[in-house]
Amino acid sequence: MSNTLSARPYLQEISIRPDADIDLNSYPFSIPAVQELNFLKFHPDVTFFVGENGSGKSTILEAIALAMGFGPEGGSKNVQLLYTTDSVSPLHASLKLRKSFRKPTDGYFLRAESFFNVATYMDAIGTPDRSLHACSHGEAFMQLLINKFRGNGLYLLDEPEAALSPNRQLAALSAIHQLVQNESQFIIATHSPILLAYPNAKILQFDGTGIAEVAYEDTEHFAITRDFLNHYPRRLEQLLGDE
Image (cartoon, rainbow, N blue to C red; front, side, top):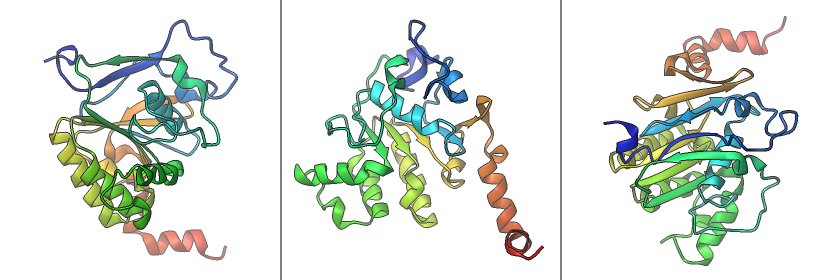
C-alpha cells in the first residue's frame, strides 16, 4: 500500500514552499541542512535526526512542530505559552507539509530547555496524576512517555535522552515501540546510540553538506561509542596522557 493510501506516516514529507521569500545568507536558511529541505520524507514509525550541535536538526524539528500547530515551548497542542525560549526561527512559515489523510489523535513536542515551563503549566491545570516537578527530569519524561502519550499520535522529541540514564533509555526504547505498535509516529533528534538502534528506523544525518540517510552502524554515534568501549584504556591514554 502506498503512503498516499496509508494512515501513517501522519507527516509524510516536508519541503520549502516554492513561493517562500528566503535569504540563503541569513539564519536559519544559511544552514546547509535547511538548504537541502527538498521533499524530506519520513518513516511511518520512527525517523531520527542526527548530527553535530549546530547542524540544524533541532531547528528543523522546531519548525515542523510549529507548522503542525504545537507551541514553541513544547507540550501538547493545548499548551500555548508565551515565548520564553531565547529565539524561534522563522523557518516554520516557509515549510510545506504533506500529511496523511488521517489526522493523529494525540501529539506532543518535547524540547528539553523549556520542559520546566511546560511542567509548571501542566501542574497548574492539574493534568498529571503526580506533579512533574516532584519528579527528576528523567522520571518526568518517562511519566509522559508511559502515562500521557496515548497512541495514535505524532510525537516530536528533541534529545529526549538528555536526562535519561542508559537503563532508562532502554526503557524509553521499549515504550516508544509500544506506541509505534499503537499506530504512532516519532520524529526524534538525538545523540543516543541506544535510541538510534530502534529497528528499521530512518536515520537522517545532518552535516555541512546537507542531509543524507545513513545506516545505524555508519553513524558516528555508533562507531565512536563502540570504539571507545572496546578500547577505552588506549583511548583514555591518547586523550589524557602526556605527549
